[in-house]
Amino acid sequence: MVSDKKYVPVPPYAGTWWPRALGLLLPGHLRTRYGLNREEMRRVDRVSRSIAAGHGVLLAPNHCRDEDPFVMSLLGREVGRPSYTVASTHLFVGGAFQSFLLRRAGAFSIYREGMDKQAVTTSIEILQAARRPLVIFPEGHISRTDDDIAPMLERTALIVGRRPGAAPKRLRLGA
Image 1 (cartoon, rainbow, N blue to C red):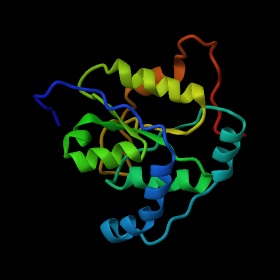
Image 2: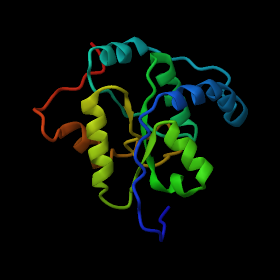
Image 3: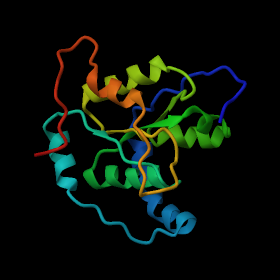
Image 4: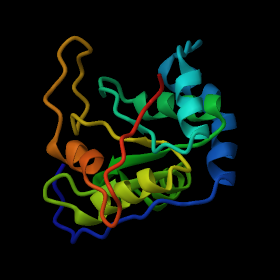
């Protein structure tokens, strides 16, 4: 979706009260809106150990359904650490209430139609701080298929491979 409006970056909300409060409403929302009645998460301990060890955690799932960001928030609830999520800027112009909720849930904007240096820098800083996981949907859009994974956008590799002001550090999701 392309907009005529000038892009204004939406930064992430650093607080944890809102993501935790919204997380309490999440299972009901997933059940009523998307029909998701049960979830199963495997190897969550790997993410928890990486966070506890002070590693920056990048989660890069494919994006085949509208509810994927909500499901990733369930993972944050499971590990006891809400995540930050990179979201297309068009989601933040859908209305003030939607923008408010997205930001409080940990989402921040990226301008997909150009090189968004602010979003890349913010993502790198989140990984360096290693306080909360970072969720990026590397295909850059909802692919509507779980069988074919679209090529990963270059920004994801740039974010993982570059650390301004720091020596390269290997990110691990677990042993």
